[in-house]
Structures are given as structure tokens and as C-alpha cells.
Length: 476
Image (cartoon, rainbow, N blue to C red; front, top):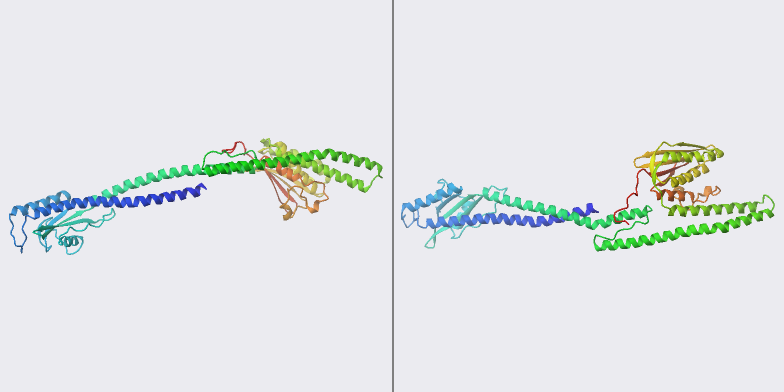
């Protein structure tokens, strides 16, 4: 969730910073240029004031008062050009003759920005502000101001400035804005990380606790602290739900255990009375034999129910266990029963360690091997193989019995379920359910698949490393 939420926040923050930064950059460029334009206007006004004391050129009604004034104006313009590199000139109305200009070969062209500014000044007003200069453009800044005498425009002062320094200042200002934007973005990303972490921490804790409860650690709870109020309320509601679920499961287990235990005594008394009644009947009576068989089957079901309740309730005593040695012991223990039925039981059990409860795993292997031997016909084989792969150690039990169909594989391991083809085989339908409960308590699992060309393949998996050594964050 964080990988989806964080990019969204970053995109929104980037959009906000760009929406603020781009107008700010434009405003800075406009302010820098306006400062230069105002400076050029002041210079043009000063030159216009000096030009007012110089008479019109050829065709004018007045003569030059003194040659010194024209020379003074020319000297000012030349100094201005030498110091600042700005072309400047005072041109008569026709634009082809100069009262004074610097450099001396610069005149008003017939077209272009200088001509447009000159024509605007002839209308007795200062030329419009020049187009904005951008750092990537090699443009020039043109300002024109009229020289007015007795209400008439007698000449025009024109300045043509290079914009290299202006563009450098704009670029430096943009770099400062960019650095500020980057710093703001880094701060915003840091704040977004903290914000998403604060918001999603309860979700991560809730997810870890949910996984713990799903894998059998029903005591796990979420610490109701931190995060938004809505998530704190969710954590409290989750803890209440977990308490209710645990209470219901405890009641169910207690009921199964108590019912199994309480029925044992009446059943034992009933079986004893059946035996007493059998003494009064002829030996070999079929009905009494059937009653005895059903009574013993009921006793077996009660024993399995009690074992299942204990398996689901008991805490696994996990430790580093030699799975190969343990599987070898179970193969050796079941070998006599297999030989008595005419079944070949073999084991390939190299030393391999894993994290498991030895007693629970032994009981699980007993149930699996018992089933394999039970359903394998005479002359068949049962193989037990131990192997390690990555973080898991597996014990694979294969047989050459009738196997199960795809529909039956989907139900194998359910409580009290037995295949319709095996109803006459001794059993209660709880053995594999007990196996699954015993393995799940220690983080293990059992899977059932087809064994080619025939038979069933049962895979018992246990972790090679501890999986519950540390409680999840926020659990208590």
C-alpha cells in the first residue's frame, strides 16, 4: 500500500511546487528585466535632456548654439558605450541622420525592434516595454524616448542593450528557485514518508497479527496505539473480534474434549454389558459380533476426537530436530506391521535438521504411514523419503494403493471424511485431521497428490528455521 500511496503524494506535491515555482520564476524574470528597463529609461531621459540644447539638424529652423554641446552629447554617448557596451544614439525624425551616436556607424535600421521603438517614440511617448528576455534567447533590449522641444518631437534617443548579464541574473535566480524547490521536495518527501509510515504502521501490525492468528497463534493481539483514530478503532474492533473467535474456539474444543471424555465411561460400561450378554448367546453369533465391532469403532472415534481436541489446543514444543533420524525411527517401528500385511516399507532418510516438535511430528508420520500401509494391497510398496529444499524440509510418503480421485483429493483431511470405496476399512476419518492440526501448530503442513502410476503421495513439510521466535510488532 505504501508503494501506491507514496508516489501519489509525491506527484501531488510536485504539481503544487511546479504551480508555485513556474509563476515565481516568470515573476523574477519580469522583475529583473523591469529593473534594467527602468535604468535604460533614466539613461534615455538624461540623454534627451542633453539633446534639447542642441538645435535641429539640416532643414531645422534653428542653428546650433554651440558645437561644444553636440560634442558633449557625443562624448557622453561614447563613454556610455565604452563602459557598458550599450549602443545609444540621438537621431533626427527622419531616422537616417544622427545628432550623436555611439558607435559612429550605428543608425536606426529600416526594420526590426529598433525601428519599431523609434517609430513609437515619434508619437511623443516612450516606446513600449521590450519583449521578455529569457536565458535561452540571445535577444537585445531596446528603449526609445522622444526629445521634445516646444511640444514637438525633434529627435529620438534610442538605446540598444545586450541582455547577456540580464539573462545570467535571471538564470541565477532560477537556480536559487530550483534549489529551493528541490529542498522543498526533499522535505515534502520526508514528510510524506513519515506520514505514510504513521498512517500505515497500524495496517502493517494488523496484517502481521492477522497472519499470526491465521497460522494458529490465537493469543496475538494488536496494540491500540499510534496512527489515525479510525485505524485505532479498527484495531480495537479487531481485538474484540479475535477475543470472541478465540472464546468460541475454546468452547468448541472444550466441548469436544469433555464430550469425548464423558462418553468413554458409559461406552466402557456398555461394552462390558455387551460382553456379558454375549456369554448368554451361542458362540459365533453374527449379531453380537457386529455390535462388538460397532462398539469398538465408537470407542476409537471417541479416542480420536479427544486426540484431535488436544492436538488443536496444545502448544507446539518446537526445537531443532533431526528429521531424517525421526523418520527412520517411524519406518522401523511400522516395518513389522507392513511385513505382516505383505507390504514392502522402505525409507531414504538422510540426516536433515528442521524446526519441529518431535512428538507431534512423530504422531503425524505415524498417521500418514499407517494410512499408506493400510490401503496398500499385499505385494505393494510404501516409500518414505526425506529431503531439504531451501527453507523447508519434507518427508514424502508414497504408496502403490488405489489412490484417490481428484474430487476425493479435494476433501482428504476433512474431519470424519472417508472415501466411499474404503468404508469397510477400519478407521474413524480423523487421523489425517489430527495430522494436519499437529503440523499446523508447529508451522508445518501436509499435502496430498497423485502418485504415478498409481497410489497416493503425501508430503509433510516443516520449516528449517524458527518462524515464531519473535512476536509480531504490536502484538501482546
